[in-house]
Amino acid sequence: METTDAFRGLECIDCGATVDAEDATHECPDCGGILDPTYEYGAIDLDRDSIESRPFDSLWRYEELLPFARDSAVTMDEGATPLVECEKLAEELGVGRVLVKDEGRNPTGTFKDRGQTVAVTAATQHGADTVALASAGNAGQAGAAYAGRADLDSEVFVPSRSGFTNKAMINVHGGEMNVVGGRIGDAGAAFEEALAENDEWYSLQTFSTPYRHEGKKTMFYEIVEQLEWAVPDAIVYPTGGGVGLVGMYKAAQEFEQLGITDELPKLYAAQAEGCAPIVEAFEAGRNVHEPVEHPDTICGGIEIPDPGASPWILEALRETDGGAVATDDDDILEAAIAVAKGEGLEMAPTCAAAASGAWDLAENGEFDGDETIVILNTGTGNKEADVLRSHLMGHGI
Ligand SMILES: *Cc1c(COP(=O)(O)O)cnc(C)c1O
Ligand SMILES: [Zn+2]
Image (cartoon, rainbow, N blue to C red):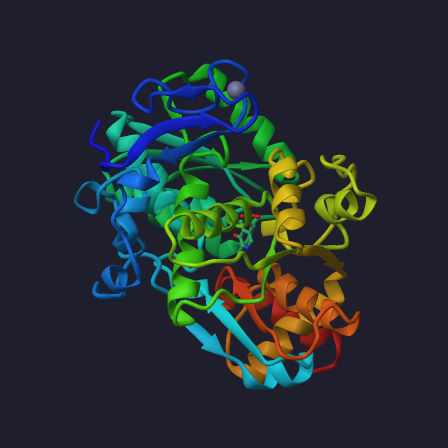
């Protein structure tokens, strides 16, 4: 296995076991917990100048802080997305600045590419032939795309309610698509059953592979660099499994450790009211979520009723003095339309939960008035233009 110099291996966030990344490919061999890549930060020679001297061209420009080197990566130059100033939004929210990190500009249109570039690179390092996952759609599309690029077969399990673009493109990328009746939980169960029967499959499932949150953490590095090394006051993130949220929490701690920054941003989890296990746990002061029995939201990408990493997500919200907010589908669609109309940026409904959540936080007096707020637009609106359009039609437009 070819790894970067400071990469030390994997550590279980539940029991603390440390394991060799060559031997352990997925969950903790001792307790089944989530494995997290570790580094010897003292051996990493990175500062603001050395980072700035590199072209802003791909998330792999931070390769010292990733397990694998850029020249061994399965990459399409994902990441390096714009951070777009939104003056009208700032005025409406009554804060100093609002910037949207536009992850819709990634190769397959969402930030899932950041996770899959690292996870599929790990799969090639481990000699996999077939990668497999269950997905609401975007992670499956990204997984199929990166698998194709790496000459791997892919098996993707999506729920029947997954969007047309996702389903179409999984096939176009050469993936084997398994449509499962029902919702993401049903697709997940069908995937687990198939995985048990095919031990040669290499799982790309979030937090089963240790590498998807590792790829997504680079969003934070980019945001800080794009703000000329200022840490934003708050980051609002549309939260499902929380992969990107814990990734950014980790990245913020890493930059502190390296002396590149000296504070953490407040991290806010935005969810849809129809499936808000993190918001419920946060508000109740609990350290772990309770699964949502009947999830129901049009935001497929964050309809995750049973997020296994909830203790880590809740830690991130509390340790950064952030919070959690849920808004309903109607407000979320209105937010997507308001942002598209006023700022030009195209947000899918799932992503607009972050915009809608930021609005709600502002209305509830969470901000003082001079903050810099970053809203994550995790994916492009054109994946679900039909959903946005039909909302307008429902209002006679
Ligand atoms: C998967 C997804 C999310 C949720 O991501 P997590 O990191 O699992 O919380 C948000 N937005 C979009 C567009 C997604 O595809
Ligand atoms: Zn463990």
